[in-house]
Image 1 (spheres, rainbow, N blue to C red):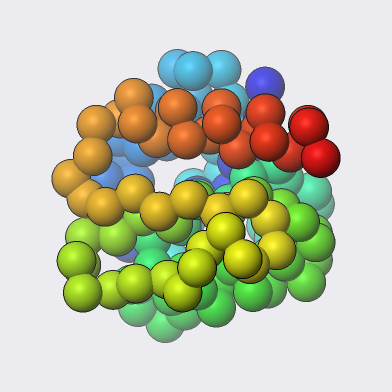
Image 2: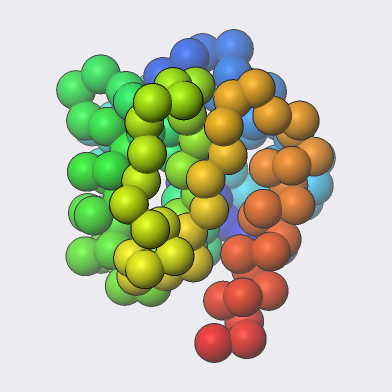
Length: 123
């Protein structure tokens, strides 16, 4: 299926998200924040970035910009637990972007990944 780069600072949430995506047949590289994810970002291609917006050291928005530089047009799925955090017109950014607000059902993430893959294939 897809090779997914996941950045989420909450250990238990990261574990559940990674496991859910793996059970759906995806390969997941999971990291605690954007800074930890950078070497994997630079090391090789991935199909989708799933990132929390608010994380220590390097947040999801900065990681997404670096992902777009390394892999232009890569789909990005933002996740956040802060209702006050907004991403200005995620669809207007490069790539196919979606925003999931915590708490969300794990099936919603799997569905968002499938939607991003279909949109990427269609483009």
